[in-house]
Length: 137
Ligand code: 5GP
Ligand code: ZN
Image (cartoon, rainbow, N blue to C red):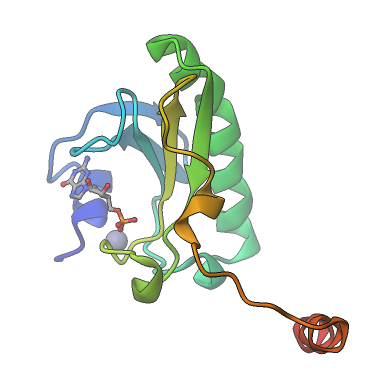
């Protein structure tokens, strides 16, 4: 099995685990963006958020919600950025879906995730209506 997060879940690779449930594992990122940077994964292998069945999606967010305040307390963070690089075009490198919980500090000058998008589209009301309808299906 080549998926590194499956190998961590199976105990074949070491990790600094901070929380474990029947369906999820939370462990420190090996190359942290900030002290306490944690990854939350489903134990089952699913590549993207959209691949998660409801019985896996719920527990992943339950674990995110359980560990986030503990992470903030542990590193005395003022806030956290909770984010998923969902798909390769979004920068996902490990193809086992995972939620990043990255501690944030007053004055860290990283900004909101909106800062990732320097050029924003200008969409008309009609285009927004069309997109919303398409998503509703
Ligand atoms: P992605 O770009 O896929 O959203 O993020 C993958 C994350 O996994 C990166 O932040 C990277 O530092 C982390 N990572 C990659 N390999 C390992 C590993 O073997 N152990 C741990 N703990 N984290 C890893
Ligand atoms: Zn996997």
